[in-house]
Image 1 (tube, one colour):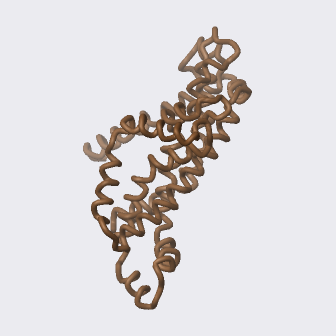
Image 2 (spheres, rainbow, N blue to C red):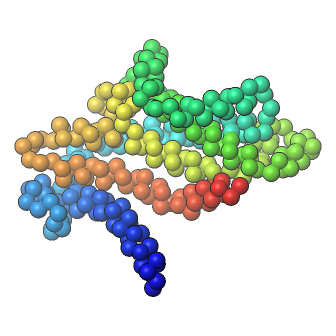
Length: 274
């Protein structure tokens, strides 16, 4: 092994260890009792226990998990559908201010999210959608759609124009071209956009905390953040219970990424090559 290869292996190993260690630490912490965690924070969970998971689920964590699935799932589906339709329009249709609108979308993408808090909350409050699934879903779509539109527009712009032109010569309408040509070609991009949108919204805390103030409507990140206040014995260090909640929260995105790993890679590589 050459010195250069040895250095590369060491650096890559260090990066991998720094990535894996927090997950292992969280897993080991979740499998300890609070007393064992206080006695030895870095030790192995011997014997392991699932008491922390039961304690976390005995509160509102189960309801919050369902709330997150509903709001994040609906927000992701709407973002993918609307982003695909808008991206197709920007790529293949001709309408006034097309270029200017796409540039405005790019500008919105780089705006700090905190700038949008007052106007978004004011709109949700005025239309009476605070503490409702619809309010949080619309908010999630609003903050995700600029990136979704830009990503799908970039993908469709790389599609050979000859495919669309030949379909138009054969008399196909814009809807027929969209459903028969654009949608099948964009399947990897759909999965990539949907996965990253889901992951981003699943971990969203700020807007969920503002919009869903009712305990019955809280999403999973909010419930985990407030988990320390809901345990029955606040005198003990509750990091083990919080670690169990975090592990349950990470389970769904983890399996989602594993399930669509190949499609995500194909979508990203296809976009890069085109």
